[in-house]
Amino acid sequence: MTSTGRIVPLVAALSTFGVGCFEFGLDRSAQENRRSAGRSERGYTTGSFGSRPNPGWGPASGSPTGGGVEYDDSDGAILPPVRYSSVVLTPDGEQVVTSVATWLFGVPVLVPALQRLDGTKATLFPELFDARRVNMSRDGATLFVLSSSGFKVTAIDLGTHEVVGDYTSPLAHTVLDVSPDGRLLVLSSIVTSDLDEWLGGASGGAVGQQSIVVLDVDTGKSTLVFSPRPIRDLDFSTAHPGELILTSFEFAVDGSPAAHAVFVDARTGETRADVVMPNCADELVLQPGGVLALLSPTVCRDRQAASADPISVLDTAARVFITNLPGFGPVAMAPDGSRALGFTRQADMASQWGYAQREVVGLISVELPSLAWTVHEYGPKEPTYTLVDGGRQALVHEADGYDCQDGECAVVLPRLELFDLTRGGRRTVSGVLGARLERFAADEQGHTLWFPDRHGGVLELDVLGGHIAAMKGTWTGSPELLARPRRGREGTGGPLLVLGEEEAARFYVVGPFGSRTVTLE
Image (cartoon, rainbow, N blue to C red; front, side, top):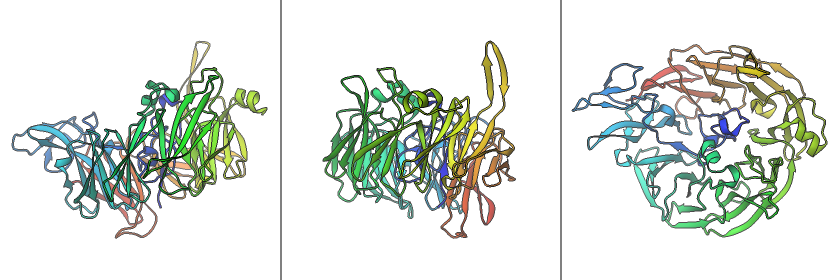
C-alpha cells in the first residue's frame, strides 16, 4: 500500500503533528494521509472558515484567489472561505471527504461531503451541519462523523453514500477512534495538538478528560471507562484484539515522573493491567507487526529538574515494562517495525549512559525487537527527521534561518541529508531545497517523497538517487498532498498522488496512468 509520512521535529512547542505509520481508524494525523511534522493531532477536523479559500462545489464566480467565493444562490450572498486542510482521501483512493460551505436557514455552515475522483457529482450531508470530526474504518467501508455536541456519531456507507447508523454517547467527547475491525467506536477528549498539551501543563497537566466512552456499532451499547489520571493517549493493542491501551501520567511520591500504560477490555471496561514506566506520558508508538511499544515524550516537566524523558520500551503482549533506552522523542518507526529513530544529546549520553558522543546532537537508531542501538553523529543543532527507504535510511532536515552568537548573526542555509542506518555514512540531497518539509506524502517503499514547494507546486524527492526536483504539472498554488495505493479501475500498481489546490475547487490526480484534473461538482 502507499503510506504517508512526516518529518519529526524535536521542539515540542513548535511541532504540530505526530509520529507513526498510516492506519485508518486511529483518530490522529500520525495516521492521516496528509502528514505534518511533530505530535499527534488526533483525527480529521471537519474544517473551519479561515484564510485559505475552498470554494466547494457548484456554480461559482469571483476571483480564484480571493478571500471569498460568490455562489449562484437565490439571495446572491457570498460564502466565507473554507479551509482545504480538512480534505481526506479514502483508503481505496477513489474519493475524498471534505467540508463544503453552504447555506442553512440563511446562515453559512460547513457540511460533510463525499466527492468521487471519477468526477461524478458530490454527495452533501446538510443534516450533519454540526459535524466536528470524522474517521473511517480501516477497510474503507464506513465513514463516522462526530457531532460538535460530542454526544452523537453518524455512520455513512462510503459505497452508497447513505446514512446507515446513529449512535449516542452518555458523555460528550471531542475525539473519535475506530477499532481495527470497525465494530467499536471510542470517544475521548485527549489532546489534539502540541499547543494543547503545552498549555495544559505538558505531560503532568490536565491534558485530557479522565474518561472514554466505547460504543458498540452492532448493538449500540455504550461502555464508560474512567481513569484516575488525565488520559494522554489511547491505542488499540496489536497483541490482544479488543484491548485498549490508555497512557496517563502522575508524579511519584519522590517527585519522579511515572507514566502509566493501562490495558483495558474495550467491551467491558475491565482493567487487565496497569504498567508503570519511569518516564512522562506522551504518544505511545506501536511497532507495526510486532508487540513492542515505545514512549518518548518531547516535553517532560520533571520536578527534580533532571532529564527524565528517555525512550521507554513496553511489551504489549506480556503487558510489562522492559527497559529505558537512551534518546529523546518523538520516535519515528519503520513501516515494517524493524527500526525506530530518535535523537540524543551529548551531555545526557555522557552523564547518564557513559557514552562519549562527539557531536552535540546525534541520531539514535534502535533495532527491533533486539533493542540494540547505535548513535549516528549529527551536529550542533537538533534537526527534524523521518525514516525512508523501508527504514534503512533517515531523512534529516535542518531549516534555514539565522545563527546568532555574541551579537553576530549569519544566514543558515537549509540542509537536507540522508543517513545510511545499516552501513553508515551520510550524503547531502542535491537539487531544489525550497520545500515545506514539515509535510509530505511517500510511496510504500519510502523511495519517493512529495513535498509542497514554499513557492507553489510540488517537489519530488528520489531517495535512492539523493535528488529533489520540481514536478512538472498544471496545478497552481500550494497543494495539499494525499497519497494512496490504487486498487480501483485504474489499479495498475504504484502510488496514487492526489493534489488538492488550496484556492480552487479541483484536484489533480497523478498515478501510473499519467495525470488528470477532477473538478469538484
